[in-house]
Length: 241
View (cartoon, rainbow, N blue to C red):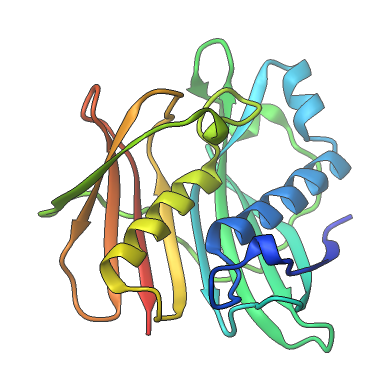
């Protein structure tokens, strides 16, 4: 099954105070369909656990043609879109029920050895599922952390941010980033796109320092750094109008 499809309806608990879907709740929907499709392809959670492995998301970008709102029915589509030495690529598209595109997204994943906590060479896994060459944005670079940032605030990681793998779920980084962006740009602007690169795992009770880089109007770049060891956990860029 090259492509998986599902429909979800935007509920009240998915939305901000203007009825727009929150980026992290949309990410949760995309993560769920990706997980179910990996199960269909024989490389889902159970297969990974049986082999002492797990998937990690390392890079993600989404661009909106229209931000879904409360009550909208959204057709989600996802498909594997290629492999390289260390990464598996997966793309997404969201459409209304008439087939009009709402958003498109692309993601890069790595497989981690649970004992050694090191990436596994994708070619060694001999994945035999079919992939498409259809990528939403072509080759997608990872964001860089270099530059001058201003310290904003610190988040103490709560229990509810931890997922089944024992570390902060990737959608929580998106929540923290968009919450911080809203503090900087206000509640009104629509987010046209965002790109996030994940750099290190974060665990319960750690503290994350959120920082902002001054940029041109319509774009904001943020990063989160672990206060305990100074390592960057993620860097995120948002476009808005």
